[in-house]
Length: 114
Ligand code: HEC
Image (cartoon, rainbow, N blue to C red):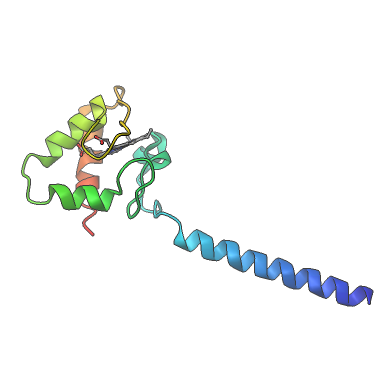
């Protein structure tokens, strides 16, 4: 009897692990985020493929596809914050980023075409 109990527990643990692995696979994709993005907390509000607090970067790239001023405009939004373009929640400003860093971020976001 005791042995059976152990087996059951082991089985339940296995199912639990399989379930959480499945959930991880379905979670918003942030695996390709650059270290600069990780360091600046972009991941707390954005993912590549799903809206979290802010829009999915794929959706942003799609919206600005073909807009030649897109990089400059996204650099502004990231640096000064943005409100009213995507919904009612504003993005806070990121005043400590350099122009080079802003450019890297904006270019990366625009490359996330769906
Ligand atoms: C506190 C949450 C939050 C953080 C942190 C955040 N964002 Fe956002 N982001 C938002 C929201 C909300 C919007 C939509 C704003 C709007 O409607 O204008 C947005 C919009 C954007 C847009 C689209 C702007 C536009 O002009 O259309 C880009 C690009 C972006 N974020 C990149 C970033 C990057 C890069 C970082 C990290 C440096 C970052 N965000 C950090 C919440 C956040």
